[in-house]
View 1 (cartoon, rainbow, N blue to C red):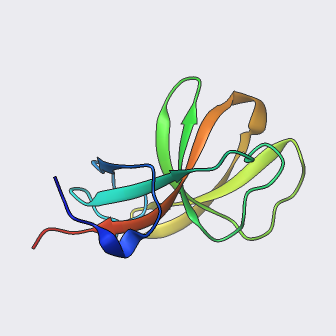
View 2 (cartoon, one colour):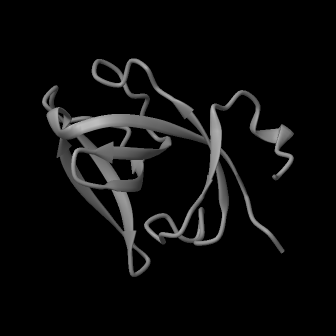
View 3 (cartoon, rainbow, N blue to C red):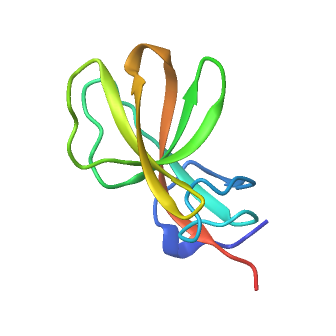
Length: 105
């Protein structure tokens, strides 16, 4: 167990093993997550989310501007370069906002 009072209100914590947001969130970081219950109609821009689709999970940063109502634009880091990708809303099962992370020293 990790004491994580600086995250504030969160639903649960998990261990990150991907590098899609390095160096902000690194493999090995613990992240505190809060479920967004209204993601289908509203996702605030410029936050980091864990997106669970009907095929896989991924850690992404939500882009500030969104092009349309059918998909959500996310940013991930690929070899240190930010790459934007759009994901259709109808394949997203759940989405969680990352409200904090803890890096062991």
